[in-house]
Image (tube, rainbow, N blue to C red; front, side, top):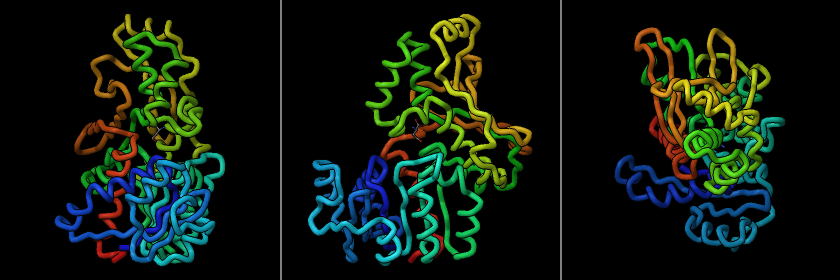
Length: 337
Ligand code: HSE
């Protein structure tokens, strides 16, 4: 399978690292030998129809921060690479934008238009234009997968749609943002202040490029829309969510909650058709009380009752666990070979 990789930041570089790390295993286990034939970032594109040397590319970009500095790279734009460099699948991992969805939205539509399968972790286009993306994928007969976009490594969409396929999912509730969970946990356990803790989350590489997406609740809202559409079969968009972030949470409010046996968590929830993101009181011994950068999601189902999954919602390698599982699912279905 040949892959166009679009975006070479934390997740794109993590994708290259994951393929290097898993190369022999993927071949031995599945006979799968993916080949990245183009890598684009905002500065240009590197192309090699025989497969790009990922280690050398990582070495250069880790040093200079730009694809254009790799030997042989040109100023070819990502859209031209998507349309013009032969491949079966595109991995889209450019920075997310929940106001316009761009550049990810155009990348995805262009790839589908030329018959390429799309795997993405990019939340903005999904939260804004899911209906259009799904319809385009169906019209063009390509697969469109985005397990990594909500909950990172946690296999939420597959769990609900494949493993629990005989259950009706009645509601979804959880902590879908690692940055805010890290901030609230530190404020609760160590009494640190908001600004200092946000800086630490940025240093860990889990905060968004623009961390206001995290703390305003907007990142959680995007993920909630994605889960609602993919799992509950709705056509919600970002504007359907009532969103409140964590900027107004004071150390005093946290201390008061603690005295009563509660913690404050930023919870995303879809129930009875309404979508909300807000700080909520969670009992200390409740399954949704997970610490640090962890995410958690709980499905209420008709047959299985409550099913709760805890895991890593962010991180270069962790997110690529879900990206790789989407690619393998396409490969193993016989498509994209
Ligand atoms: N900024 C996000 C988080 C990254 O903190 O969870 C993963 O979407």
